[in-house]
Length: 115
Length: 112
Image (cartoon, rainbow over all chains, first blue to last red; front, side, top):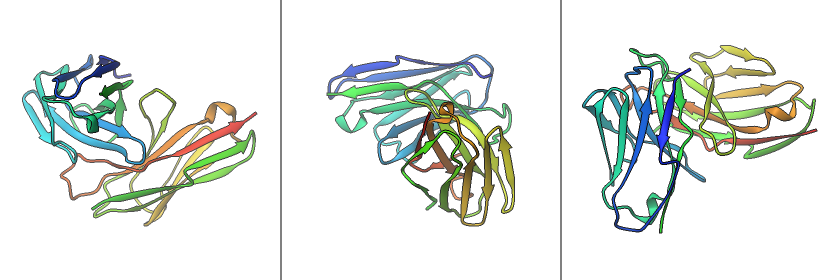
């Protein structure tokens, strides 16, 4: 079972402030992902990483940046939060360690509210 | 663009009453259709992957099937603990190998 820890689990912030969400995994998985989940939209991919310092954009990447300086940590940053970024954010890893099986294991989520 | 539509949006069943959830999809070059279960306040939990039409997978009271245009999640004699939102997702060949396109889910409630 992959160990994924997301922090913070809940955050309320104001428009224009920077926010960083952290995803920490304990089992050396290569692929890591950030998704957001909103009513009526389903889960949407923001950014993903396929190794240390190797990241790429997903379908809703505007307003977000990511970094992965260590295998175990994948950070999602909102440089200047907007109300449209109020959402539940999920980190996920790909269970197929070195390969990409498409079978994802998700964290518990981080609920972000931007006032 | 890959698309996934799930129906119904919500379904209430009596305990023991079997039914099916539908996932219709359009995708360029299917590289997997995935079913997940999501409990309130939790992240989705992987259930099945299907790759080709005619394929079936089973797990306890759940069976997933796949055709060229849709997938069904059959629930046989459900129990209250099967209550959850069930998500369907597809991976196509257009967006490299990474993007899963998710549907909005079917919220299943099993009444004791």
